[in-house]
Amino acid sequence: GAVVSQHPSRVICKSGTSVKIECRSLDFQATTMFWYRQFPKQSLMLMATSNEGSKATYEQGVEKDKFLINHASLTLSTLTVTSAHPEDSSFYICSAQNGTDPAGYTFGSGTRLTVV
Amino acid sequence: AQSVTQLGSHVSVSEGALVLLRCNYSSSVPPYLFWYVQYPNQGLQLLLKYTTGATLVKGINGFEAEFKKSETSFHLTKPSAHMSDAAEYFCAVSDSGNTPLVFGKGTRLSVIA
Image (tube, rainbow over all chains, first blue to last red; front, side, top):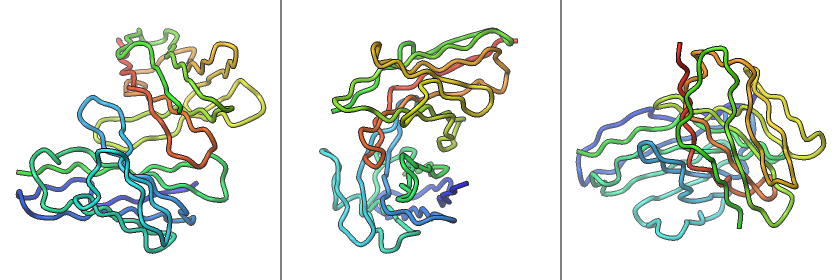
């Protein structure tokens, strides 16, 4: 089946530094990638949608200059949290859309970001 | 715009008992409906999905769900709970199959020995 590899699984960084999270679709082409954020004991909140080769579309309230999304190829999308602060600590999950599979959403395993 | 309501943030059942997790949705178009399970600090695993066709959908691990348009519901059931079913369950909806999923708030399932 479709697999999305997300790395790192957990990361701790200092305030003010940047962190990059990668999501790779291993056996299919991800035409669209969705990035979600999940706070403890809460649901997933959509941050942005990215299509290969295009600029990402951010949800209202999500700072595009802080959460940089790159989707340069059909198998790789990255989320960079710039100038991280403790309030950015969260669980980040990507979801890749397989263009050939109707309603085919495959989720990465998530990244636990802790900013100290 | 779509929305999902999951009734009950926490459901507790005995091992071997019926599992029923409720999900109601709103959508202006025929929806695509999903159930996912999440274990602590892990991503989401698809249990089952409804796109078109048969309204009773069978998924992995003995779970199934029935799409009831008249009730705008997509409740998840399993005849006999196992300890390994203890997890967080999310119902989600999409209006076209390629737009972002909209998630419910989740239901935490506890299984008591």
